Image (cartoon, rainbow, N blue to C red; front, side, top):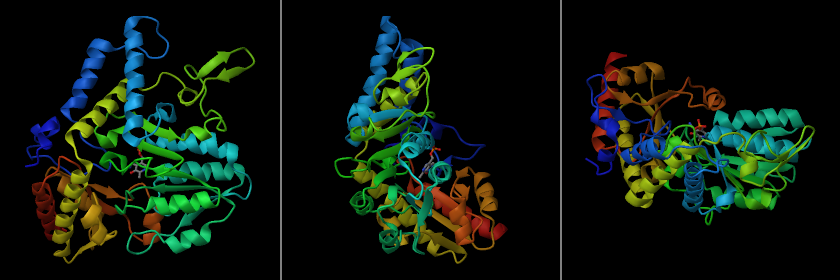
Length: 404
Ligand code: PMP
């Protein structure tokens, strides 16, 4: 039994009479008690709106919100004013596409991203490209689930204005050599946008090592509450980036015919921000930083991947998609199919036994179409998982192949 698991109360309650085997953390992670306590304390003892109130309760709430910003900044080695709170990765990516993309893209410009990108990247950029007469081009994915770096080189040109990439693919679990991508993007004058939804929860984002221009991730995938995300914007880009949404909080002065905006990060935080959620996210980061050695965590998750890969290799109908050897060294998720079995049938059968895995196109439908598959079964691990979870999944899969 791993020593982190006891910190997550959800595992105390059986699921329809079965012990909960939760292998869907790449979709969303379970919450440690410390986060639930922080939210409870804030809502029951400290709750007031931030940014506007003059009374002590509101001033303290504002301070807590700004402390949360500083905590996130420290977590990824950014400066606090470079951290914009959003509702999640999707909101962050839309903000970049509209605020930066609409302002900077011109007819004929190119946006590059891997063919495996999540809908939350592909769709906003498709939309902005259409608006501006720009084109989205896709870096091909090789059969082993890695990026075709030669094709990337060939696609780069002075017309490329932005390169966007998931740090870890939510489809294949591939860890991308982002620094090689960033260096080449910068060499043609393009900005680099990192989707860290699948890497920030595992402590992999450090701006001192990864000089991305923008970074987005979600709090709910790292033990924080839903409704909170992080958008890092390098301070050098702040002034040349118009606002995306307008409203209260972000405005410096408003008149009947015009308005002026506050500086970043506030100019990108229109309306009442998700401040309780930000405080919950800060508690999640606190929890991770005090309880987890990220190198150890990643090695542990990879050992669970290796165990699953080994078990699947003994199942003739199982086919793994992704860089199998690397996943066993540094992965936290494994995607696969079972020949002749619909992925939804498999996941529903496992679900009836308390085993939670994701199944479908994993929000990457164009890639699934390209691969000619209806979808994948994805098992994803986080700090509370155990070898017993993997063994239960494998036993469940053996049942699945018997039944279908
Ligand atoms: N990018 C990646 C790589 C993801 O895995 C996800 C979540 N599945 C997202 C973006 C979108 O995150 P959210 O739904 O929290 O906005």
